[in-house]
Image 1 (cartoon, rainbow, N blue to C red):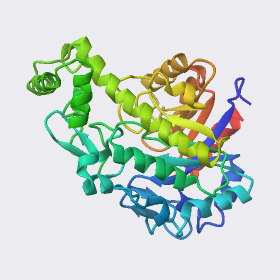
Image 2 (cartoon, helix red, strand yellow; image 1 turned 180 degrees about the vertical axis):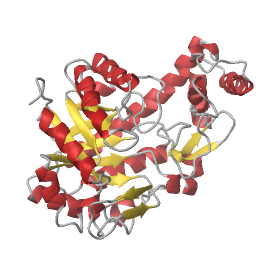
Image 3 (cartoon, rainbow, N blue to C red; image 1 turned 135 degrees about the horizontal axis):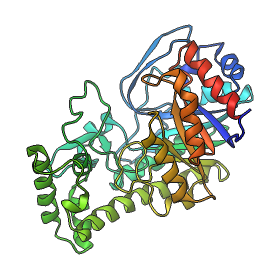
Length: 392
């Protein structure tokens, strides 16, 4: 046993990993899993299922809610979730959760909020826009009224009538330039500070809000464009800071609007959770960098007080990811759990996982969230079991 066991270990899975596989529960029990974050709504993915007896690949080709769409819940809303046929049943999340709960495994509803290319293409006016006017269709704008309403309903409908221990909320804020999409051809085009500049959303609503904060919004947009062009031309270092492009007042205004949007989104979603079940444990995917966008966006100053745990991605086995855990612990204090989100999937080498997990725990993680029960082959599953045995 570890000298410093963690307080909670949660493994992740999709509904299609559970449904149709009579041995799934036996495998997870064998390695000591007692809690699973199960996807209730998720973005598009092409998922391997090496140990499933009926299929080896699932092509989840658009974002979906893995519950039936109830017309009375979505009536009158501009943005409506999509369902999918590949989940394993017509109510895949609830059916898979029931299998797990009946086996004595606690279930957390894993809910992805602002990441949906299919909805972004259907509702382009509700997506993130960069300083050049390029839209990011995968990135639903978290401050847009239609997206706020969508996220609240999505969350409420995801968890309705399902026996749950908690919720795990991903993409509760703005996605930015970086996107792991099909045949992505953008890697490295805007290094370093470029990702920050290309991730600043410049919709008319945001420009107006910057103006309300006392800055010239059009001047901000022009400075952002100049910064990107200077980076592309080699006259701005990738290691530059945002203050090499914007003034402190301009940067503060941009960040204040983005964080206010994230706060409003989170509060609406958590209100929907508490209306259904006030005692559910809340895990928020987040990051300590105030400029961070993506599935684990920046933690705002008020976010820690609203949640039970903050989950930070520690997939790469690097000193940087350990530092993210350490910085998150310093940010949230001792009253909020910090989860290290670790993976056994490539490019991670299985013989390096133990040392990396130990480093995240030493940095302040008191929860481990393990990725991923359905994507793994047998050696990788055994590696998950080794981590669980070490920290249980």
